Length: 137
Image (tube, rainbow, N blue to C red; front, side):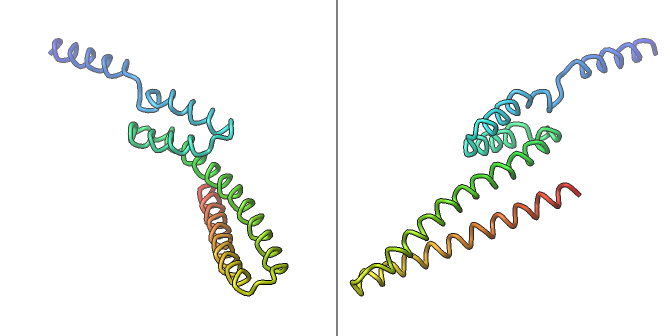
């Protein structure tokens, strides 16, 4: 009986000494947070994908990474909205000043494409905001 108790104690102490999944994921989480704070959003998203693949059981780390994922995605999308809006406004100005009917029609097609992209990006931002709100509840 004493041997069984001793064996259980030895096994329990061996398992207690092993690092948890979150502790194993800590260096990668530090890298993710650094990338995010440095404004390297795509690299942060890639590192989060790596975290999910390498540490599927690191629940706390994955929860923190989800918040960073949403924030980085939001910031990237907002930057893309700014670039798209600038291109859209420039195209509209070009279209209004263009004399050639052919070139004007080509610019209309470009304007329509940029407008669809702009609307889709705004929809993406709304979805991210809704998910962030949902996660806070």
